[in-house]
Length: 306
Image (cartoon, rainbow, N blue to C red; front, side, top):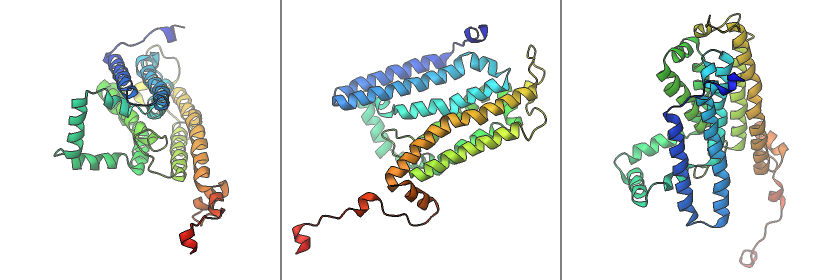
């Protein structure tokens, strides 16, 4: 039981989360004054997802998970899944962007808007924004970050240097995770730029990368990759066995996010293409059959008939 009750952390990140939640509630209150009840209820439901995502982040970095991740590789893999997948999923689903903006006073919002639209750096900022929110950049950067941080030299460096561990490793997992899920999950005011078929391919491709990484850590290895987990005091679990358990977590837990997300985007693709056969036709790069609504007779007005 002490594995769960002991070793909880207290650091400034918790206060950052409190400030973010307070700002979000202020923004919701201001939006409520200018919105109808339907939008207000929708924003409140989204806020529950956003707060759940923040709670998952806190669980990953403040609970005993973070403490035991320094001793056990498999716990570290659980932490990575929470930071890179589950927290970003909930935060993107929560769409906190407009409420957080409205937490600023009117004058400050106007200054931010003028800076982004008319400021000397506005054109560059817009270009950077378009680049980092591009679907291909989001997909590639997310998978590259996932793979590179598991290279032995880079992983060991992050374990020996807490600045690298917290700000670079965890930060890059979370930021690229948010960018990735912005391509899959609607999150107002961001628009989904890629088609449902592309989204399905991104999900499957990312899951394959995780499978390959898991196999490299287990099936295709005969010893532990990471020197930081060798001969730790008080740890009886062999480093290679620990690594194999961590690989199994990457392998199995990948389905926990991939399968539900894939079901959603396949349904989205069917709704867009009209049928599953049209989706398969589009995947094979052949011309899809007309959707049901395309077969309905078109109405013509009197002017057209004459």
